Length: 390
Image 1 (cartoon, rainbow, N blue to C red):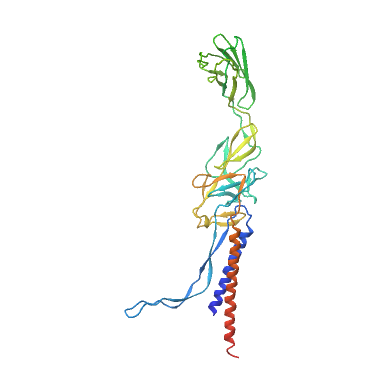
Image 2: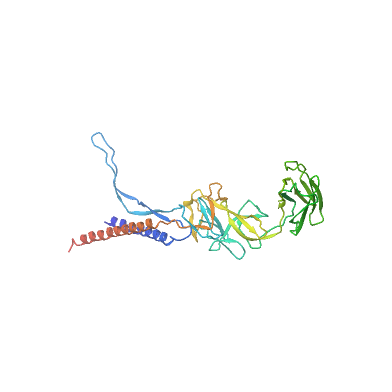
């Protein structure tokens, strides 16, 4: 009877733990990136009252007789199944679709999280709601650097540097039926190495044999050339013009009749610009949109994976820290090495299944009640035993 009392007590304790775990799951039903837990039971040591007997020639063998001593919690497992997506429309909200964890730095400690509700602090750093700094690789002049991840910083003063115009392309058609002396003038804004703008002008003059081209790059550079066409309107010349440091490509111009569409369609070079906004691509690259119209990478989010994610220790604030049984973090870019891809403007919701959790509440409650009955029944038997002597 004493054994049954202690078995009942162990059952009460174990089912109380199950109630605690289930209650925590339900409390976090709306926690971003939360992963539910489940309680696992196992029996305790059993008392051997009779050992097993080997079979003989005249008699059969006998099985051991054992009395169990109750139940205990063998473990609390975390379910890392994917949670559903919740669209937010915020550029700093990110969701991992697949395996992996965001890498964050809190003080001198590196933590890992599935929650991607990030924002920018006053220093332009990408941070989680508790102030942990998101880790990744920053870009220099539009080129992503490798190596060890560091703090991702996206200050509004981030600059896309100026580049000088070195090439320009002219497309379209010059009318073959235009009168001799007809002029077509086109201009385009170009830039020097400091980002200062100037106006490049091309003047096309009709001649008896084709078109003459005279150019001025706006900084004292000039050049001339000649365009000739065959009877089918195809260009027969070299189609190039050098204006100072700008090489003008004229090779695509045609010479059909009754059509004047020639234009300077493209050129490289740009003025300097500041960061206006950014968007997230699936591979974790943050593409910045600058005031000069340039779009280029400004940073890339780092993800981490573990051999045994179930071995991670919950650190609070949606964070996890590695343990001896989780393995070391394997850092990589989204979409590589088994890492999931990233979805911008969305968050991963909690993977708590309320129907399952409420069922677990009933199971834990009934288990608690049943073990309480063990104790009361054992007490009644002990009471009956003491009543033998009146």
